[in-house]
Amino acid sequence: MATKKYKRMTNREKEERKRIKKILQEDGILPPDKPRLNRKKFAQEVCDEWKDYSLGDYVKLNTFIIVLEMMTNSGRYGNISKEDLGILKLKKCAMVLDQKLQENGNRMTIEQITEVIEPIWKL
Image (cartoon, rainbow, N blue to C red):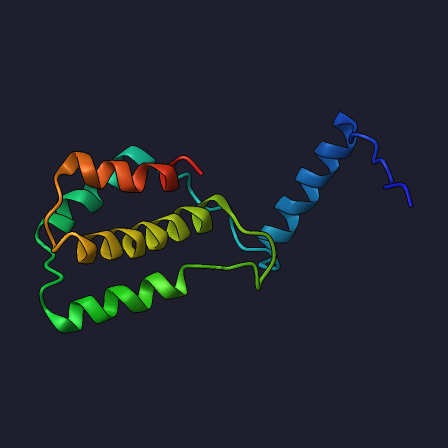
């Protein structure tokens, strides 16, 4: 069965949708638009805070694992987003690196670690 091709919306239709959305937001039916996230600023703030955050404490490590698990969609709720893919790659890197570290007696150089993880980064 052939997929149905949809026509592009005209500017008039786009303007009508914007107007309706604005009315629905004013009536409280739709939530207001979220402000855009400054990704560079957010990344810098998180990296600065992360320096002071130690996963040596079991409670913090457990909290980190719980949040990491919650953030992965794994396809159960629809398509897998770029964010989901990034978290899945992070998990895979951790598992592969742990396996290699155990094989090498917890001794690896940065170059060796990069060599092990690079194929996953490039997926």
